[in-house]
Image (cartoon, rainbow, N blue to C red; front, side, top):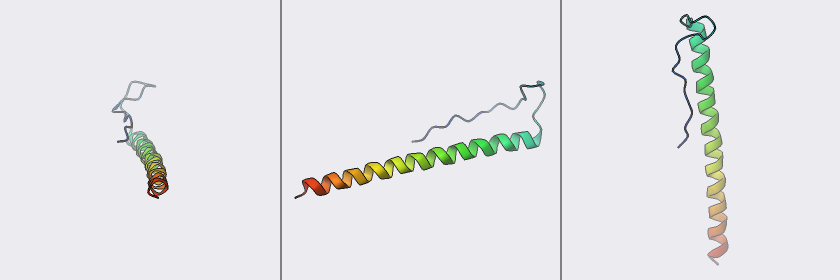
Length: 62
């Protein structure tokens, strides 16, 4: 399971006011990209481990 910290901060740290809509959209897009990247990396690691396991099974099946 991939865990990515997602910020729930709805306030702009610069001026203490509410973030405007575009700023929130940028924040959510960056978080979505980070999640997608983490999932890709986890999938690649899982595929690599599965391939290594398959090679071991073939090697010791003889």
